[in-house]
Length: 232
Image 1 (cartoon, rainbow, N blue to C red):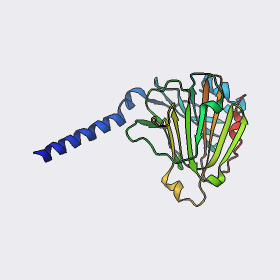
Image 2 (tube, rainbow, N blue to C red; image 1 turned 180 degrees about the horizontal axis):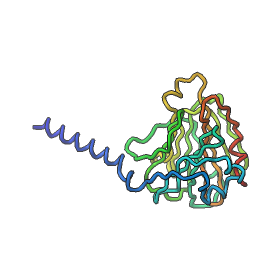
Image 3 (cartoon, rainbow, N blue to C red; image 1 turned 60 degrees about the horizontal axis):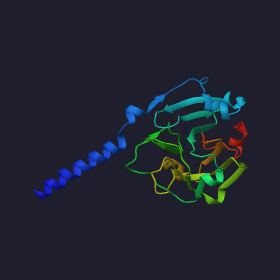
Image 4 (cartoon, rainbow, N blue to C red; image 1 turned 135 degrees about the vertical axis):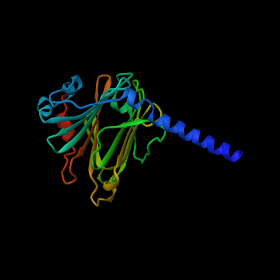
């Protein structure tokens, strides 16, 4: 009798976990394919006009839970991921971001949505309500010998390296991961790892998260590229 109760209890727990992982995905996240000309206010606010002309909108995920998640193709060379994080206070970038050079793992029981994957990196965003934040814990791991931190201005910084994992958590480092990036299985096998660029651009009470990967691993990436596309 105890054996059957254990089996039934285990099934109930597994079903509960499955429900938590998948809850609200279909009801609250809608994926919208839009044409190249349909850029929104945030795009034109921070991206130079000549850059918009070279961007092709691939996927936009809109939700009541958070700001839009966007994937663009730039000049058939780069995958460009873009979203906005609202801030509670207008404070400096140095005060907001705490950097940790360490590997992280994805939260299993937290529901995530994934923009269209590329061949080399899986990029996921938490599918839960995201309010304004006051602290960002930014963790990064990969080829440390090739890691470059570029301080473009006091409000704009970039990190470039062949990436293994990247994650963002807010307010407390023990809180659930909101953004998680991981090198795909094939990327681990390459002798020469595929480059990855992550940038944070602060404008008033918002931080724009910009992620860049090559469409093909042979493509060379300029670590200053994201600086050149921003409208200061």
